[in-house]
Amino acid sequence: MVTNLKPGRGRPRGFDPEAALAVGQSMFHAHGYEAVGLAALTEALGIKPPSFYMAFGSKAGFFGRILERYARSVLALEEILLPGRAPDEALAELLESAARTYAADPERRGCLVLEATRGGDDSESAILARRVAEERRGQIRAFIAASHPAMAGLVTDFVACAMSGLSASAREGMNEERLVAVARAHAAVLRLLLQRPSGG
Image (cartoon, rainbow, N blue to C red; front, side):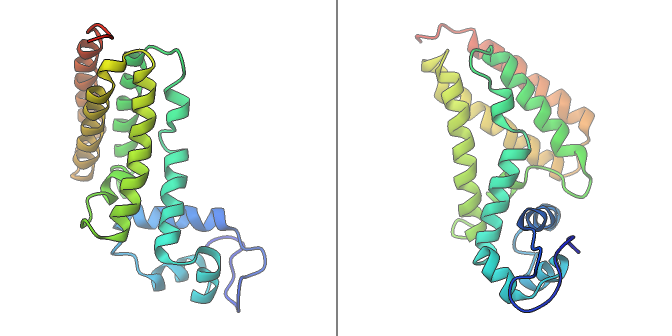
């Protein structure tokens, strides 16, 4: 149960949305969006459904806020893709950090955002996740374009495919050592790509 969340009518006194998001993030990451029902959520949060709807609007709204929270706190791009930093160095760190993060928790393997994008085309969870994933790709593309404008599209796609593969492999049980080796292999290819002249 989330600290400061108590059952009762309406919104409980001392309701902590950030704590609720942390609990929800853990549940969705471990089990997937579709497998986590409203009853399980409200029980874990220690609130009644009306309180949940008052705070978050809907399960989808709750999940959307969790995806944004996850994107800000896990592999925060702003801390890695620093202006002026060599792109091959930054992207190598991003990939290796992703590999280590995706394998860190046996119960929550892979990337919450990327794994959620694999839902059905019309599922609300996949639509929300794809929006966040595209925003993150946009950040990567802008970072690369600052030094290698002609390569920005290709390199961004390469990094996105690499991270998706790392996430899926972690989800399937590949351990950290193997994932890091794969991430470093991708980084070696990136260095070759970024050696091309920035104008072509």
